[in-house]
Amino acid sequence: MTDFVPDLLPVCGARRRLSERLAAAAEALAPTGAAEPPQAGRDLRCVLQAHTAGDHHAYVMHLDGQDTGSVWGRWGHEEGPLGLVVLPDCKAVAPEPLDEACCQYAEHPGGHCYELTDPWQP
Image (cartoon, rainbow, N blue to C red; front, side, top):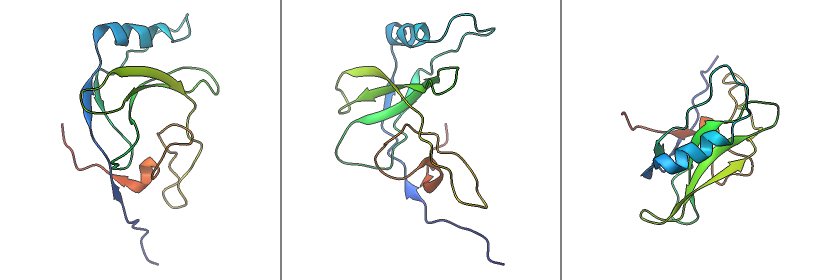
């Protein structure tokens, strides 16, 4: 039997820093009453497949609950304004043997996260 080795595509990786004000705004979107309130990620990196057009998107935090989606940071170019948007989760799942869910938002451009490679090491 041959091992499944997909042809992986490069991730964009454009970086931004989420301000304290926007982090607080993201955290305010979380449902109340959680034992541990979620913390917004502040160091953002675009998780989409490498692209030359369209907005960059970086995961900020998940919203608890069924079909609530996640908070994403979105910006148009390196120094452009950074905004927050709540987007539904992508429902795609990798074929066997990976059987891994996509970690991006619904209707995202480019490949699913399990089709991408990210050589960056923090």
